[in-house]
Length: 289
Image 1 (tube, rainbow, N blue to C red):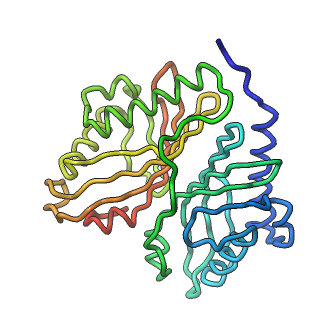
Image 2 (image 1 turned 90 degrees about the vertical axis):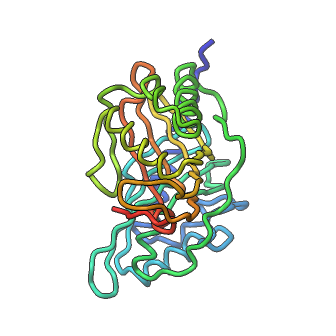
């Protein structure tokens, strides 16, 4: 039986998040924060102070390091009381150089306001510019699942994505990749345009990764689905004990977080966008874009 989704609620929550970025991070109308955040607002980013003014305080600190700092939404998926988005932050360094960073943000709404926030940040950009306190990556829930009503297609799309992480990535069954991905699927990385398209390139890339990290495991921390889109927060763990195409093993552990958006077509992934925390790769001994 197909469930009718509350399209109005999704549209209102999408508009709320877009308003957040317009009001706070583009127009800098910080006095309106109390109208955007719920009184019980909780932030799971360890760099953001607690309370409804925490995001404003963090933004002001960042703007001090990167004058002219602003943020814009690149992609957004609204799923009942959850909204997940890719965001690009731009500004200048104190030396006058361009600053550009990609993040993924997840918001839970309650009573028309933002009540909870998680994110994935490409911390390598912050580390490159000398930002301190980047050791923690926040708290994540266990056993994630879709929240609220969804259509049969949305649930099937979510199960498709979860199955790919379970079988292809955690169980290393690259021979099953064609169950989940179209032969000519397209891959978009938010930081580099050098990632090749297509299933065969995908399999070659991850064969190299699995050889480098023989114990590689993925954990899906969050998942949202709306229409033909699925977005997830994922934690990747393993140890660089195997050979990889860029050099020898370091023996160092990997704990990397990503956010991935998938467009599903005819029951398989047709297109994929990602935000990656490249600092984790660097700490494990791998080169980064």
